[in-house]
Length: 234
Image (cartoon, rainbow, N blue to C red):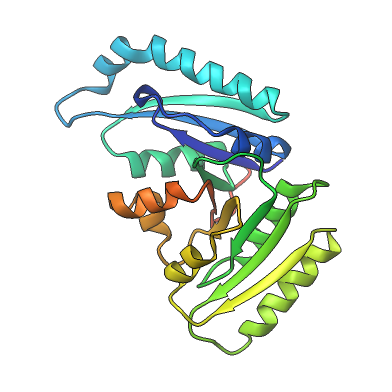
C-alpha cells in the first residue's frame, strides 16, 4: 500500500490537523517526529533527555491516525539536518509522498498541480488512492508558459481521474507556477504536487516566509519523483 511520511516537529508542540488525518485514512502513514539540534549537541545526549516525552507524543498521534481510519507507525530522530533526515527516512520507509501539515477541517477539495517537470502518472495514481471512494473534488492546475502537448496532458489527466469516479475541474494559467498555485488555493482544502515542481524545495525546506505561506493554506502533499524499491518499502 502507498505510504506517506508526515514529518512533525514533535517537541515544539506541532501536531497534525484532523482533516489531514482523515484524508490519509486510505493509506499507510509514518509519522516522523524530529527535533533539530544545535551543532554542538550530540543526538545521543538529546535522545536520553527527550526520548520519553517525544515518544509519548508520537504514540498519541499514531492513535489519532488509527482512530481516523488509517494505519500509522512512527519514527523518532534527533538531527542536525532536517532536510537530509526527512529524505533518508522517506527512502527507508518507502514513502511515496510527504505531507506538510497545515490547518484544515474536513477536506472536500484538492488542488493538484501538474506544473513543471513532474511525474504526472505517479501524482494521479496517488490522488486516486488517497481519495478512494470518497466525494472529494479535484482541480487540476497547469501553470507556466504553454509547451507542446501541455493541453493534452491536462485533458488526459482529467479523463483518468473521471474514469476513477472523481469529480474533476481543470485550470490553466500562464503565470509562474508558484504564484498560480497560490492564486488557486482559495476554495481548496489541500494541495497535491510533484517533487520536481518549481518551488517545491522552497515549499518544503525554503525560507520562513514561503513555509508560512504553505502552512497557511492547509496541508500540502508532495508526491516523490522516485519509485521506492522493494528493498526500501516496508
